[in-house]
Figure 1 (tube, rainbow, N blue to C red):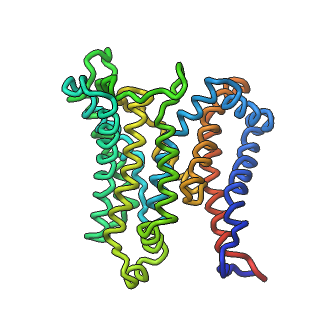
Figure 2 (cartoon, rainbow, N blue to C red):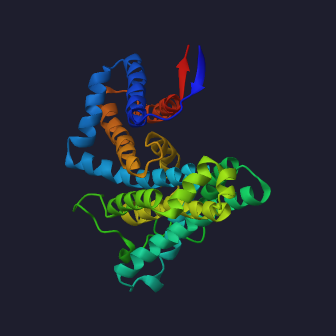
Figure 3 (cartoon, rainbow, N blue to C red):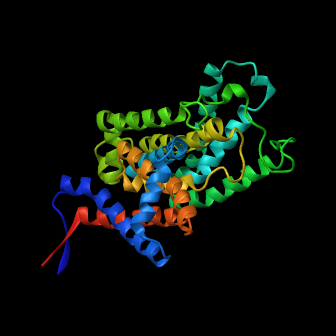
Length: 350
């Protein structure tokens, strides 16, 4: 028995690999649920009922999916060009604090929302870009692995945000709770459904997914970014501006993660706190891998993750088992997806 590389990747395997990965992850998680003393089929039924059984659950699922789509796109765009952005969590928080600094002053209170909202989103995106350009610059200049630098910058970003919300941006009306001053009403995103938390950020996220798909599939830059990821020496030999391409990719990836933080503040919280993200930056990596780095697939993968996160709370209350089973299932999906991707490129022969 030996492992050899496939001469080409069958389309059927590429399409089926995410489905097989999720099914395998659910099967393993079902075993853990059974060990905890519950029926796996009942548990998964309760998860679906928690996410789709009421208006509240459905809208909360869409609200959770919005930042997951953006952070998933951030990881997918970077990974396709072999820019290993593991700093989505830090970029998320930096984008959030940039919006709090920009859109919380009295100087902007009288501005119309049609101006404030795009400018605030741009502020968050630019902050995320700057956060990723640092590790990319270290890679291009000194050959430093951006996996390490982008990951470590997550902790730097979190400490910086903590300093800001306990210092210059602290809300004096928060009764001692460390949080930033709230953004002005003009920077608040309109709701898609009244009396829910679903906001137009969901439309922005889905629109960006289709825009990135068009860029990657129908533009010269999309071809250049794929070439840079597939074979950097060959791309440079063919005349692809490799450094410029990676810089643009980093701006897109960091900007999307920063935009996710900005939209979370503008659409859901209204302020920045240390618990703003339950791990959206890290979950975005799993979402991107489940989508096989495909921008449209990111939407479906983000919805799957959001269903697990929201539905597991209902399941936990009904069955008395930990809601962390959702985190386990999503993490297992990444591992099983990596195995599936391996077998789309390699096969076992006798």
